[in-house]
Image (cartoon, rainbow, N blue to C red; front, top):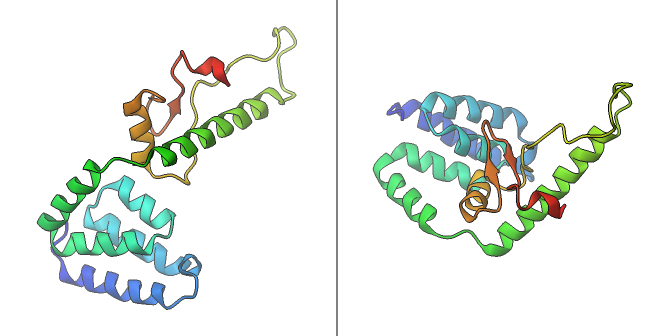
Length: 166
């Protein structure tokens, strides 16, 4: 974490500029500057990309508060993690995951470049990157529940016993 007050002051200025827009998602240059400053601040990359990627103003406020007082923010983060993720959110995320996986499979099977000696379509992919509409903790919760398997570098797959349910 950074203890540089100029970084926090610059983030406050950028937050004010972002709030000045009718739609905060339109503040592209400001969000780019926020991303660069937060990277230098040493915040967790997953949280950082989630907030900036989703243009989450409330999340940005939390990150700036975390930079102001790291000890208080750490206890608040632990409390937030302790709260269970809504089962309905998990259900919708799982539905979106299966839809993305089905579309990826269809896209892969529709390619013309199959070899002349191949026996037809195969399961050439095992995992996909989940939809970005849900934050990483939702996917981690689904892994904890046993509904998904985490492979590496952001790729997830259905467990072997659920992959036939597509």
